[in-house]
Length: 395
Image 1: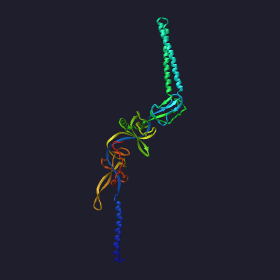
Image 2: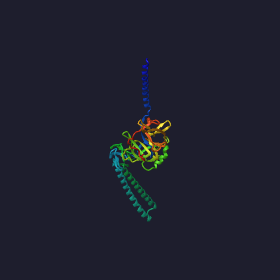
Image 3: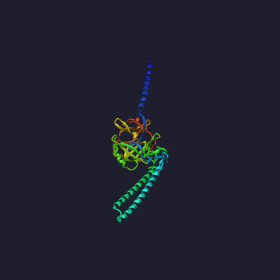
Image 4: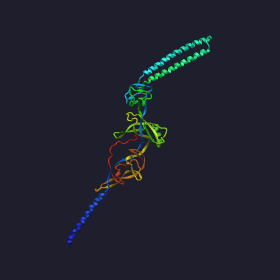
């Protein structure tokens, strides 16, 4: 190869090597540039947080009455529509009254007969008392007549009791509602012979306004439950499922705490009373119950979605403003980074978590996008969409 050709090839070779180096360095630099991760943040706030406990509850009627016949006889008529509301004293059914009307008439006739005998015995006693003053009869005869008067008087009293019994049995032929409530399914139709031994009675009536919810809590909650038992105001909330969502069915008060702890389960049994204005609670249904036992004042809280778990426990990503980064044109922009901060937690629910230590009010924590973060990661804070947030003092 001639010297002239070597002189030409050397610069070409060096130029090729330089181009290859540039091509290799350019993607490497792009790869080493830290990515900016979009996140949403929320401030650390102080608020009055209701401390609650949750349980599964069973709805129970405030009162339940089984309408049972008190006498035996054919059921003449049913005077209510099954499944309807009835008021106390409303006529529900009628039993054939004729045998009981006859029994009442018979008792009254027997009383009239015994009253006549009593009147005769009294007149006889008066004559005997007049005769004994003139020593025409002995004192023994007068004593016997007094005993006869007393016996007839007792027979009349017995007749009065028989009349009252017959009148009571006659009143039982008209069956009336003892409470106000909703009737169930009719168990016996008109035309059947009913008696006090009829299984299941005629119908049941349940009071739905107000209504109870029965639920259980662990025995270690007893001190706070005792405090909630003497708290005024509505401190129990019942939830039901509607359209796939959990919604508030009713709010009520803690009414009853059982006097013993269930030894087999180690739980307390409680009853909450609800006014149930919209009949959202129905006897026999299961509902989720939330009992507010107290309120923690001026607590430091963060959204529960901000809490993350690591090898050393709970932590949150806190937003830190870093040093300004210079652009190619000479201007600078602030760099936003995140730092993991360990926290000590208190009460928590699906919305908010109380932070005992690790944060200060006003700091910002990451609530969305935290799964892609690492210590010192660059972030871009996205605008927070408008949403309904829980206000202070509401459960």
